[in-house]
Length: 295
Image (tube, rainbow, N blue to C red; front, side):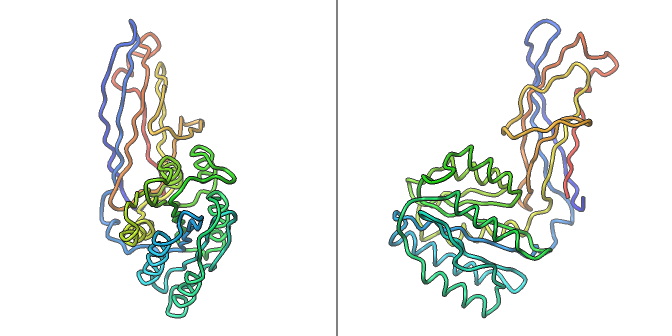
């Protein structure tokens, strides 16, 4: 891994029963070193815009203006696409190189967007994923989903959408507009996509958060980061927070930490149970081996 990481753990014990103790360990993984000074990676960005009826008027106007502004912030190293969703999802503009001609094509596509219908967020994400897989090698693939409502067509629950996004193995961030959007859904999607969720109370400030959501992925210092936990004899893993799918292998339990951005780390809490009757005396003080792996 080009970027070194600092691993900090803090522990707290509590007794459960004679000869058995429980332990909470908080583990923070932070990027370090000169690799953080590297120039951002070129991006393939798909903007996924909610065009359901509730977006009509100022909300949609400000979102479209923000999308056009993002086109000005990207450059010829990058590609940008526009996908919209309401009752159905569709591609308004395929991946387009962000040069002067590309910017004109993107603005023309945005100019034809109107609001009407329901909220098929799953359809929008599905179509956007299909666009992203066509991106040239060497571009970091990013999806930004923007919505003011609650999904009500297709997969519509937080758990269902998070599971679907996790299966895509793509970077996904989300922006929630207004008081009626489903924060739980959008936050779950962003977490599953190793991205960021932001609440936008005023559509007029959307451009700042949209730029942050898209461009941050160009500052990823390690992607597909994983924490591997190898337990000693007599030690049992009870739970891990935030709750993420675990897989078991010959070298322990593995949980995905996702992508790590320049300006943030990852915090994980694990609860262990120690059975002293099974834990070798020679291993006292050593409960588990923690390894962070990524690329």
